[in-house]
Length: 350
Image (tube, rainbow, N blue to C red; front, side, top):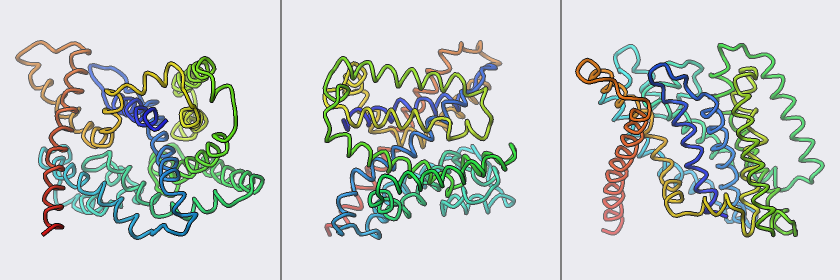
């Protein structure tokens, strides 16, 4: 069910998009950001385990080559978006914040527990700073998760969760973003959950189950997990800051990935997620993610400046304009990146 997982990338990107869209007193959808970020960390672990698990098991995996390819995939787009953020003045770069710019260039901003660093420049790139650590430790975590007996793996996760709970109980609200939401070693827990979900899915795929075989049962299961997701989003504001920042959404994100990964026919939701427009949007979810916050900022700034000349547009129109600007910006950066890739290939062939 690769298509369904790909489309889900776009669904959860929309949640993150809405968490950054604030207009005319509309409260930001913070729950969507917390949920979406957790989903992407877990999905990354799952996808990498699916793609590279066989190579690691057979001894064919080369970590240096893996890291080089991962960096080549994310860094050029990161650099392009960083330059765009500085050029358009989303984050002013002066002599006093050149260290923040340097940390962004090196993708180490998430290691510095200050919002002036981890949310500087193109703020969403903090995720890349975290995912680089996940890539670095991926083979270590994979070998541990895949080789442990079920009882040992359960015990290891109990120990990890106890340490995580102690951490949450001792972090003040003011440091929650810096430590729980952003700090790379903490977010590797989400990533490791994804690898563990892959192991569970590998076991389940070999078994006969009504959910896996029946379209009706699959539809019921799909509706159940999305209802659980809606419930988690609804209670988000009533849960303590430390819990809702990440671990509140672990169970439901695990369930969603596990269900859509294991279904054979899929239900009604899987049928919808396999539509080509959604798959295409899922395929461009990474550049959408990298561009969207800048696009929202530019659009809302322009609308604010025009408010003295023309009436302030309604919420739906402002949202539509922000979405259109995000798509236009994504198209532009993809065009630039495609030109860069063509030049690189030509040099390789010469």
